[in-house]
Image 1: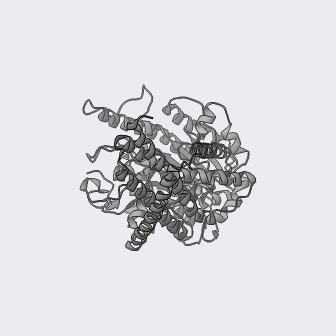
Image 2: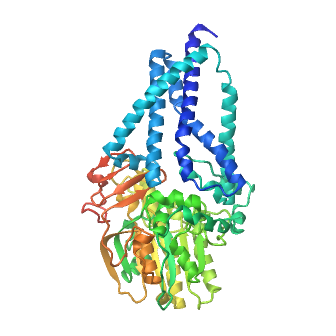
Image 3: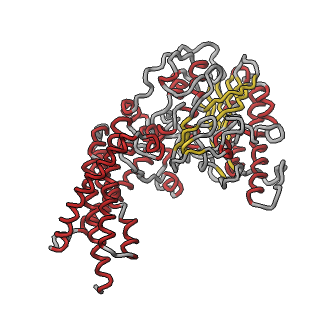
Amino acid sequence: MSAPSRPRAELLRFCGWLFICNALVMALIGLRYLFYLPAPDSALALIYILIAYPGHFAQLGFLPMLLLAPLILLLPKPHLIRPLAIFIAAASSALLLLDTLVFAENRFHLNALTVAILGWRSWLFAGIYLIIFIVLLSLLAVQIGKWLRARRLRRGPWLAMVLVVCILTTHVMHIWADARYYVPITSMTPYLPLFYPQTAKRFLTRHNIMDVTANRDRGAVNSMIGQSGDRLDYPLKPLACNQPAPHYNTLLILVDAMRGDSLRPEWTPNMSTFAGKASNFERHYSGGNSSRIGVFSLFYGLPATYWSDFDNLQLPPVLVDQFQTSDYRFGMFTSKPMYRPTNLDRTVFASLEKMPGVPDGGKDYELDRNITDRWLDWLDRQDTAQPFFGFLFYDSLNHQDFPPDYPRIAEPDNGSELARKRADYATSVHFIDSLVGEVLADLRQRGLLDETVVVISSDHGQEFDDSGLGYVGYGSNYSRHQLHVPLIVHWPGREPERVTKRTAHRDIPVTLLTRLFGCSNPPGDYSTGADLFTGQPWQWLVSGSYHDHAVIEPDARYRDSSRRLLRDPRQQLSPDQGSPHTA
């Protein structure tokens, strides 16, 4: 080894062993999580825990090496690198210890939102923990230096190989369990911090390695549902329902990425006309700026922070349970598989014995066209004496897709790509409106409209740099453009109305359970929402994306993933504190 490279090699070895030892410290701290993990109910689940636990904490403990290694190669200064390594290792252990305390109290881990709301006492204790760990790791660093000089630490490659095997095996086992809907393994995920085992249902299905739909339809989930109920106190009390007569049908139509201000006569003539004869909630907001969380908040009526718990336990909402208990027929038609990207197969519809298939291939607009055709065919074959729950989820708007010969209703106002997307979005909305119009006209023709509760909404909105801050699409910003969505509710016998108070997706389950099924429980037993028609306007929402959360208030004071308190006028939900209309 040449002289210039020797200091780098020595520092890399020192830091490597320091972080391996710190990983052991973190694994000892993390044993507290296992006290809350339900006892494994199979040998396979026990093996998974024994492999996943050391592998995960090895990753957590060794993660700082990814940051330090480049610095060591560029600046191999022991007097700089060693104290920095000790501080980083101590900080990671201190944060982990704080996380164990937060998890023990609240059953969730530290994230951008929870860190922002921790009190000064928590940070004081974290500072004390940090000092203690700095002292302990400094003593350990001295001992590691002695061991290295004495050449007593020579099993590093073998240890690394074992840990890498644990990590890889963890991901392989979780991929298998996720595709097989094997809850004893997938339910472990929320108990460990920063634990994100891999899934691959899309890959397995595309390459015909595993029939994911068949796995689910064989009832692999249903056999587990009863075992997972005690891991979430949901609902707080069993529902007490006395369904009034008549037993109305229910049809829920979701249009992916339909922002609230797109409900206008020139874009959506059918839905706008229908809204004028129903209850039109003009200031309605999704519980998330992404499909997964938006749909979750609509069916469960709970904040986004609960999504992973229900997903890992594959526990359906009480709303769907009540439809089943009341012997409703389920007609569900989506243009994308239920497992992508919303995980509806593992959450909302986890208790159903069979998931609907999706036609292979085709353009997005063709798949949406197929939704309407399949729905109409399904209705043809139903016994009208038994009520139904219909679920139609159109997706082509998400990609601004429509038939090539479909008349355009808007042209780009300039030559930019963003202007083209805006114009395509308008035409795509119009195309889906024509499909929804067919569904509504068919219900009217069959005489079912007066017997059916119809709910039309969206999972989230869509942004086209409306605020001038560079946000495009969805899942990126907690603005009104990504959160405000239409909500039209046709309730048989109810007079048309324009509702201008603030409402949210979390209010929908409460409304259906109390009015459709006569459930007398207070909403707090199963939701954070209120009745759409009689409840008070919301004063705050916990909204979610794929990777973070935010607290939303009417004047748009909220914390985003960078923990900033935003008061930029361009970020307000509206110029008049909550109105959905674009300025």
